[in-house]
Image (cartoon, rainbow, N blue to C red; front, side):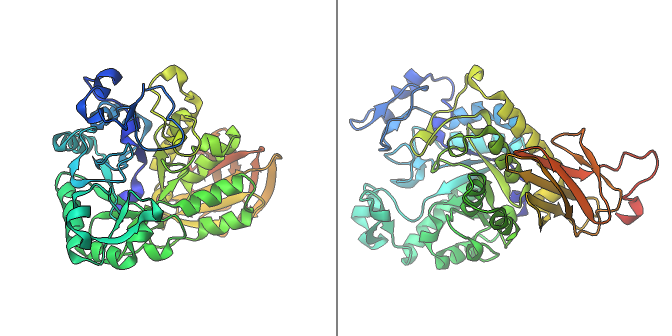
Amino acid sequence: MNWMRHQIVYQIFPERFAIGKPHTSATKLALPAYQHAKYTRHGWDEIPPQPPRGRDFFGGDLQGIIDRLDYIQDLGATALYLTPIFIAPSNHKYDTTDFLTIDPMFGDESTLRALTTELHRRGMKLILDAVFNHVSDIHPWYKSRPDFFTGTFWRDFGKMPELNLANRDVREELFRVLQKYLDLGVDGWRFDVAVDLGLPFVREMRARFPTTLLLGEVMSYAREWCGPETFTGVMNYYFRDALLGWLNGDFTTSQLRSVAGDVHAGTLDSWNMLSSHDTARLRHTITDASLRRLALVAQFTTPGVPLIYYGEEIGTEGGPDPDCRRPMIWDESRWDLDTRTFYKQLIAIRQSRPELQHGKILPVESDGLVFLRYTEKPNEITLVALNRTDRPLRQIVLTPHSHLYHALPLKNLLNPEQVVSMEAGNFRVELPAKSAGIFVPDDTRLRAYQFYKPRNL
């Protein structure tokens, strides 16, 4: 399961990403699946209506994702996470009526198999969303199998009755769902409202699927939810709120340093996300462009797997749900190209540095956020520094790491012209206001001498 920590995850809300060939918006929304009295149909460039009712449709589908894989791969993403694709009356599909049927709005099993086949041909992965806490109140089970339900509704939403996971028959049905789609080529699962499932269910599921990626949506501190008997990792909302709170001045640097250094089983495989289909987009949460860049640097350098919510890489706007679920912009003239370039730069940096993928972290005491990422190999080390303030950061910081040698040159990958040298276990941080540096050893500065000699690697 360690393959996850080497990925760049791209999250897609299928209804809003792309309409697949040969359809246009008009022909897709004319299909029978969209002809319901309570449904509204919208042109691709319209804004989702408020308040969110889950019955407005734009026509995105699985074929649209297949058609846009060149774009996703060019960005640098290596794994896709799709929100639910099973048949449901809503646009978000978190209220399924049949786990074993793909919603005809999105395609069918042959379309899913075509997607997994093409992803695997490209060396990419696919993670699906499992909603095992509740279903739609029009699910056939709700009338035919009252023993399958607890009699309660998820967070009192009357249309989403909760499943009785204490019932062995329910658990067996759900495990059958997991296996069916694994057999169709899916590489792993993300579990909605994971804490509602309960640890006993998660442990049994892990025992049944010991080598499968099982990742939970845990919107709180997740140490107890990760490990060899539970989830591989989580959607790391704890990290998100701490980082964005720090950038907005709600948390101190020492608090964020503590969060960044609090590594537990599952951290390296958890998703470092700054936005999702459930949150406002980054441009809405952090209005300062320079601070948004700091958020991205932290996302790609702290322990965990970067998750990019579709459209963030081109600067898509969007407040809370449903505004965060706007259709993907495919008119390149409307893209924020500087943001996309910066994403590609950070992806390339992370994928070229093993320590950023699976290394340990050592937070360093500083007025800014400074930390080391490193592995057991002496030359696999990165020093990251972030300055969120309106004034330059100039400070000498101690770096208690055995392989940051005296006089070793360090190059800032975000500004390669900036090269500084280590002193006797300390490093002079010099950063402009609201900026960051990603410093790595540069062992090419001297003509013949090497700091990291092959005999010591």
